[in-house]
Structures are given as structure tokens and as C-alpha cells.
Length: 81
Image (cartoon, rainbow, N blue to C red):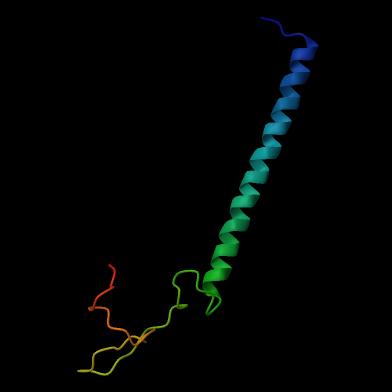
């Protein structure tokens, strides 16, 4: 099974292109991992949580109160769920 010169050249060209895309994919993966690790180390970046990793502390025996947006009762008429 002999291959002519054009087929050999085409295969080499395709191999170079494939190698280039593989190298670019590996570099992109490394850059992504580095960017995510740097973003996780920056305090207050909020990558893992919306609060940036802070822990809420409350007083024992006291219920937490949420801020009220309006004075209307949510149990009365016109309340929607």
C-alpha cells in the first residue's frame, strides 16, 4: 500500500493543525484553573457564595428578623403565594 506525496503532505498538515488545537485546549484549561483558583483566594469575591464566605452570627434565644419591605400584612386579603 503506497501513498503518494500529496496524501502524505495532507496528513502531516492535518496532524500539525490537530496538535495546535490540542495545545491551545490544554493552555486554555490551565488558564481557567488558574483563574478560578485565584478568584477563590481573593476575599469577598463571592465565587463560592453570595456573601463571600462570611458566617452569620446570632444571639442565642433570639429569632432572626428579616427586614420588612412594607407594612402590609402578608396574611390579609390580596396576599399572593
